[in-house]
Each structure stands twice: as structure tokens, then as C-alpha cells.
Image (cartoon, rainbow, N blue to C red):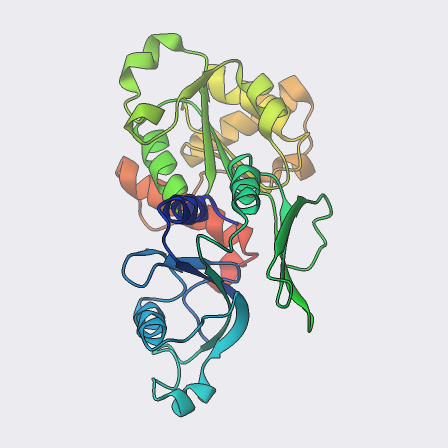
Amino acid sequence: MQLTDINVITKAQQWLSDNRTIWLCTILKTYGSAPRPIGSIFLTDGDERVGSISGGCLEDAFVNMIKQGKFLTPAELFTYGEHAVEQDIIRELPCGGTIRLLVENFTPTTINHAAITHWLELAQTQQAFVREIFFTDKISTTKPFIDDSVRQVIETSASVQLAYAQVYSLLLVGIGQVTEHIAQLGLQAGFDVKVCDMRKELASSWHFTKANGGVDIHWQSPDEFIEQYANKRSAVLALAHDPRVDDVAMMSVFDTPAFYIGAMGSMRTTVKRHERLKRICSLSDDQLSRLIAPIGLNIGSKTPFEIAISTMADIIRVRHGINKELL
């Protein structure tokens, strides 16, 4: 589950409240090249659309099939690929892959509104949860879970179980232009974004507030911020370019399981930072090897926006386990 998908669930709840019939598609498997990952969702009432399961071609074909009277059962499985020849639609995605979908048909009279509301609540609070959709009983259940080892999709003859892990988060320390751009890109990429600073005199320089579609600042000490929010799905970035702020965050972050630890600055700044952290915190070379600094992929970034792009690209690379040497 990504935060971008919360908008789809919210819209589903709104449309059902407006007495609309809706179709919700969830990607269960992909074969070959496919533009969207497993778990991506797409919603339509036959006209309006929210979310995405492809680059646009599959959404168009799906809406056309709805208008032809297909997908009227509460839940069914559908593989968009080679079988499509029989249905007189394109054989496969333009990228060459095929997609297996769970298609759910909700009507105002058959949907369990409490189930949709519970699903939305779990997603909004960023809890890990499981949805199980039953084919014959016309019901679905949603429940929290803790074990990250749960398979993402489990299909049986009676149901499909979808496991949504806790969302990934960006913990940004230090207000600045780079921070603002990373926050914007992070939200668009589906991360939960939190920003911390303790220099309240800079408050007027932060314009990407929650009221403007962004995030509000956590005015607290960076070490407390890290201890409160960092987990194994967190990327922690020191962006203040001020040792009084960045170093406080770095003193705590190596005790967390954060999957990405980065700090902005030149190679000279990085060497000095390593020296300070070794001297003050007695950090070892092995611990400091987790620190990615300077942050970002080396794409010749110069402007704040370019630095933000290179940083987000590197975070996504690490999240997906891609070796930098293979790029």
C-alpha cells in the first residue's frame, strides 16, 4: 500500500455514498514488463477514473469491457494478456507484459460501508493490514497484522488475501529548498513525509505546509524526532547543512534500523562529519558505512531540484535492492 492509493480508497467511499456503482481493480501478479507494481489499484464508475494499473491502455480497455456488460459479479479474477484474443481486445500491454487482476464490483446496496471505512482508517494510520476477499459469500474482511513475512498475495479457490505492509517514510531533518523539493517528490512517490527542525526562526521560510498540500514542521530536537519515528521502512536525511542540527540527528540514527541514512554536503564536509561522529559518539567505520554522503546518485546535480531528484532516485534504488554498480 502506498499513500498515493489512499486517494483511491477515499474516492471509493465517496462514490458509494453518492449511490454510484463502482469497480475496483487490484494487481495480483505481473508477467514480463509491467508499468505498475503488485498491489496497485484502479477505481472507476464506468466514466470517472482514479488510480492506475497500467500506463493508460489497460484502463481504457477495462472501461470498455464494463460498458459491454462484463464484471458484474462481486469479485472475480481476470488476466489481461494472451487470452485477450478471444475477447477481441489487444493481446498484451504495449510493454509486452500481462497483468492478473482482482476485479471487485461494488453497488450501493451490496457493499459493506463499514468494511470500506475500516480499510481507509488502517491505510490512513499507516498500519500494516490484510484484506481478504471471498468470491462466494460476497464479503471482505480487513484486519491489522504484524508479521512482515506474510506473502503479499495469496490466492485460493474461495478467496484472495492481500497483505499491505507499513508504508515507507521519509524523515527529513533541516528546513531548506532541497528539503522542500524532496518532500514534494516523496509525497508523489507514495512516501509518508515528516520534516523536523529546531530552528524556529526559520519557520517563515517553510511554505510547503499541510495547508498548501505539504507537511508541517515537527519543532523538536532531531534526536528525539529520529527516536520517535525511525523504523526499518524509514529513509533518514540530514539536510540542514548545519552541524548543530545534522549531527544531532546522526548521533541517534545509527541505533535505528532505517534502510537509508543520508546527509547532504560535499566530500570535504563528509570527511569532517565522520571525524566528529567518531570523536563524539565513538562510532565505528562499520557503523558509518551505513551513511550515504554525499547523498543522491551522481548525475551532476547542482540546483536544489536536481539534488532532490538524485536523492529520491537513490532512495528508491536502495528500497528496491538495486546495486549502484549495476546502474
